[in-house]
Image (cartoon, rainbow, N blue to C red):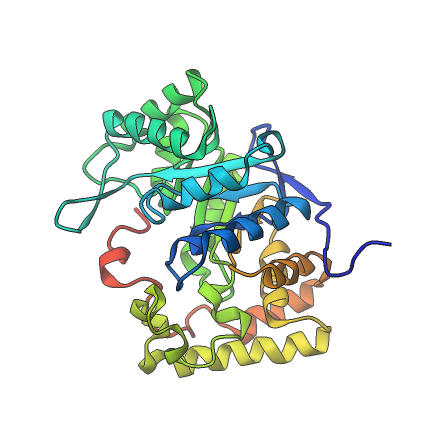
Length: 335
């Protein structure tokens, strides 16, 4: 008999028109690098290994998460398991000597960034290589053309975009097939994500939903704005004291429905995203194995069309207070 505390992921989805077959639920690895508070490397590696053992094969990292730390951690954690994994990472953010972050989509830069990621991950190819943010100073044609060269050289199997507008996606896809587009997508944030989803479906591109739990808000575990003091979320408008009460009340509505469904708030929120279609793959992150197993439990939550409509009504698109990013990050999103 299987251990009920060690669930198994048995459903898989194909990313776009590629041959990348990923678990219906992936694992976002950003939180292992201090963005949402401290995390010991041993704990992060343990979560990754537990995810792999549970059947999750889709790992998402980026060179800017801890400025190389995250990729290095992932590389160590997956040692000896490379063939079991669809590995995604991203390029595009550069840390300047002054401490500012700038976006770089130039071909010469992305070639060097890819090589650096391969070294840190200790792999000879990346399965899905994303442009993390679109560089407004470099035509998307040039960036995607260079990404296509990486595929031709065997350094990447497929390419993707993150936080790209529909018109950018169309233009990129004409240059080279885009396998997946990554966007923030949760009950709390749907407007722009669903604009993108309409285009990815039209073009046969996979959709990867990051932050499907609203950076932890939709777990119900964040009780006050003070709970995120000391991590990056404290700078996010939706967690500011002036907005938090309104947003927490929306989460409470989801929690009430979750009780009636016999699942947790997080599981219901994830089930909502999973139910949007087989072309949508959420990649929630967590620093705890117990939360990982809880998230996997969302795959067993069945929602009828009426349930989806009820959830959407409980959290209307225009009801959330505050922008989803601080101003310094928001200016680089959705280009």
